[in-house]
Image (cartoon, rainbow, N blue to C red; front, top):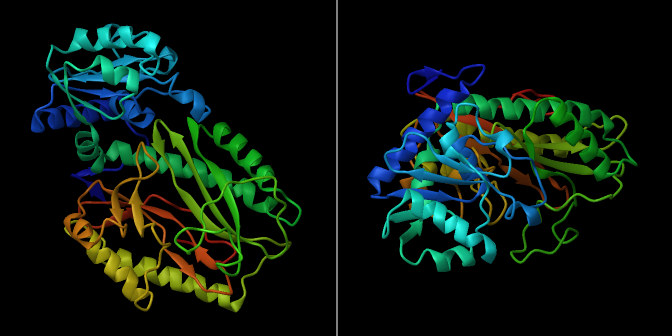
Length: 403
């Protein structure tokens, strides 16, 4: 299967991928009448530059983050980073700069000087984040959100981007093969996290994206954590909680490879010889029916609304996902990005979202039966020129059926 006529390669051509992403950003600058992008968010900078940064505590990320300036008409972005070793080797030396600190009052003069060096007074700039100190200093520019430009550029992935997502997912899945055998009564959630996190870096992950989730699901909503909407609470943070015999575990994890995220989700059972009950197996079979009904119509030209309706029909007319969640979301340099299907944005939004080659869907239906917990898994699919291709390849043990 191909995407815009190109097969998804086994190994991504990273230099070509960066060139094609820059071309898409330049096209958006022209289409939206922008003089440039000022990007502070880690995922946006990774998309614009290909820069790699170490994973870190979120409280420190803002202070030590790289920054990208994308100038209209310039084929190469400018990168300001405290981690020059993470810059792509082909980034010209005159586009690699010392770090900026626009979140600090003391750092704003250098940041505004760098921006002024690239853009003239009154330039129209799109920003993904705007710290208060920097906002005061940029009063002379026309500032807009970068969401429209970045969203449009990122929506349809190239074949190389899809190869990176598939590699990230493969690393995630291989690490999970080391974790699953440890799922026994008496094991702590944090024990599983330790094994998983060590293994992903042994396998070549760039960073961990989210703290791994190993959430024991209660049989009823009332027995679980309280929520404002009255539905299931998921995900909740992993702790040193001890897992118990017959726990139903919802697993969720995401790692990054060359800036691209994976998204792994499965339902596991705790026990020395875990076997689903007849009711649990029926939940899984209903989940499969929802996925198969959705994939049966999944191709370019189909709307998100049509996919949502197919999933609901396969679940007997009931929405097969958690309240205020979604049937599917995209994945790229963010772990959840467009397209989004089945959100609170409503049917008009879903009807306007038309599938096209290069889009990525993470399907994550949920089958919930009050009194018997439920079943949830996630798989990644790329929309191709004439259908879809799975980027996930992990079995559904202990339910015994592979993708």
